[in-house]
Image (tube, rainbow, N blue to C red):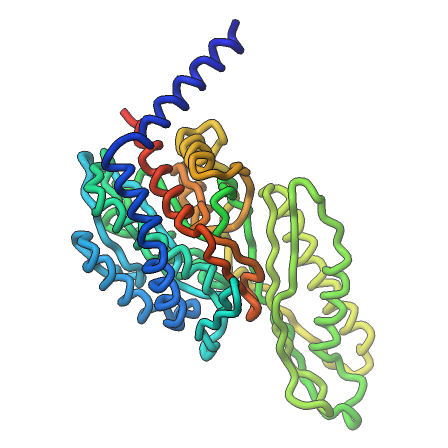
Length: 411
């Protein structure tokens, strides 16, 4: 009887949501997104060709602010952290944030020119997250064109600092320090492309910069002194041999390394950066302790091996990034709305974990989800990143429907 009642209630909820698809204003907004697909793709290319490495997003932020004004969003500004903000008033001051990140995971000087080959387009950051930014603009346009009223006020945000050592600074500022923080009650990030992928879990991340220093010297004349690069090799070898569980998924990576001056000099310094992730805070903490132990043992080992020289290496391990883990429960109305919206645009929703801007609001108890901006893509964070625009309008349609379906759960 309980199961039957639950099934009946679930069915009634689905029917109530399906009514959204019949509303003339919603239908008008959805049709607009499909009809203006090509224009939104052109905007995506325009965005992608504005270089925006992490900590260098200002030009792209100014572009997004200008687009917010063009669409008709109110009180447009670039805040103290560099986020571009635009408001769309609802019947309540309680606010849902709809965001996409400005930065790309590439260094200053990367060629961001979009190249089209057949069905695929290529450029660094074209999908991650230029597609999200284009979808953000498309959603705002669709709501305006359909004259869709919302209960919640919507804050559209193009935020800084999602990638790499940005450490979510844009969203952290928004929820922790901005003058609007107390009004922000829910959060949607548009990141990635696939509308089937619903990120309701935030994988925890800890990032370290390890620095090893010593006396250095001539490779022949001072042979026998400890070498910072040799110690780094010892540490990385230990670290790479650590076994981690497949579930909860836990990962690690040495992302870059630099040091030394020339081939015939004992390296005075070596610095490298480590990325560690897990769906479980406990597993992440365990991995962190093993990593720090590997650093200590590697330096001790190199110093002991070269003890006759009288020189010693020293090490420093600095935490340079921390994204808290967490999860918006699958039974939460926001996640149910996202699943319904994904099905409504012809997809099979799949809940998953990842590390996105949603991590931080989730850690504060704010319901948050990350959704795809539409189309297909692969090779993110690589110069071989590609994007296929077929039916990409379904991304903004899915996000728009998620916003409106979630509203029905609010009192």
